[in-house]
Length: 201
Image 1 (cartoon, rainbow, N blue to C red):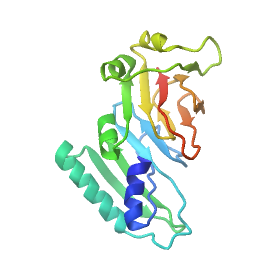
Image 2: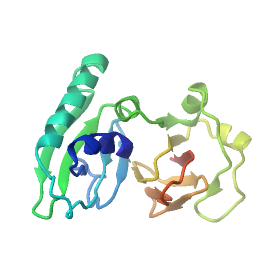
Image 3: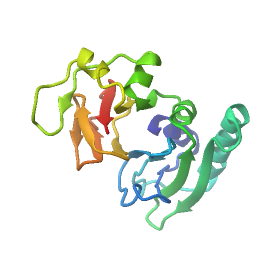
Image 4: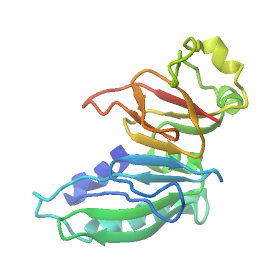
């Protein structure tokens, strides 16, 4: 998500910030966030401060609309939607985007992203890693143990970001920290790479 928008920023030299609204689990978002909704749709948010830049303009909106139109022309009408574009007084740009599915999020942003059951992730070819129980009770779960939780839901992604799901988080991979029952954050250390896993029910 962030890499895709920043590609546009390099051209327009403006801020992109995606802010979420319109459903019960998207309130109070103040940082880079991905929200996986119950119906399978995905909302993404990038919130950054470019107040030192003199280039905040409507140019980004036009480029976003162009990118969305090009994607929807191939994937199907309405797969990615730009709902609102707002420039605040402190030079933050708030863009409301909605993705019809996790595949659309991955396709539009050109990065690895999966949201579904463990069994579906396995069928899609994803490999699993050791994961820790967020309650602090019980042993860590090895790769083979993950497969035994086939009906549990899992989110797999590469970008260090805050994640919010519609369920109780039970297991996370290394590099992640839980923040409440439904939220976790991947390490935002600059230059960090790898794949993050989050399981919930």
